[in-house]
Image (cartoon, rainbow, N blue to C red; front, side, top):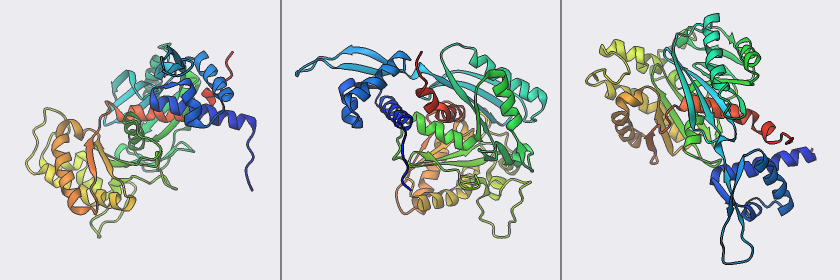
Length: 375
């Protein structure tokens, strides 16, 4: 049956189209909005007036042209609204206030272990509240990035052996407490998935672009962006690179890290190479990067070929310590194993995870905010 659209549906669609156009281009002439979108001038005028009244667009004055009436230049304001992204990596919590362009405006860092105790929850809420009270502008929501397989609809961590979660852990109470204290809606997702969203956003990629984000640090994982959308999978397992298997005698166990993670996760590398871990002062053991690449390259090459992805980004704690060496060696190995050329680069985002968590929260509530009736 063909779907019918209400006036509210059409209005929401028009607002989103103009928003995405302005965000992508940064600035646009008012008459060109009709040209780019196919909307009638009266429709464009209504959307623009709403956006100007709420500072989403700013009037940059008239532009001289050789023909006819001088058009008005409109500039996208990335600071018209914000969201808060929260990420856990190792024993560190990071909470960032992020604007509509994916720029981190403020960030808080705390050293703390994963326990989900009352003290743990209190510290999270305190960090979020401090950022929310900055009074910079509307805050659209909070995004939480956690390791493990996450059912984003039910807000349940299915399993995350690296932090000791081997049976489903329900995060709805934590999310409800955050909302109760701050008034902000909360979304939760896998940390590497959100890092992929953050990297995609900061690189200003579009709905026709693909990206494979590989995180190497405490564990190893991937975030897969296809046609501008995050691929989670029917059971939220997409990108669980740590469970890639090369040893056919291996038997999977949800209470333990996956095969690849048991070989190249930080703990495994520390034990194998008598190494101190990912920090800038740690001496790099001979042969460690080659070992890491030899184990990592085959499953990554398989993903690249099967999904036909041209862009790989490496992120996580490994970037600061072995980033360029790892990239160069992995590029060489992937070129050997893949049918087509794939470009590998290092993360350009100062904190992909916190940025992506915030951008996911923005996306979750953007249409509601755009369509608020101005007073």
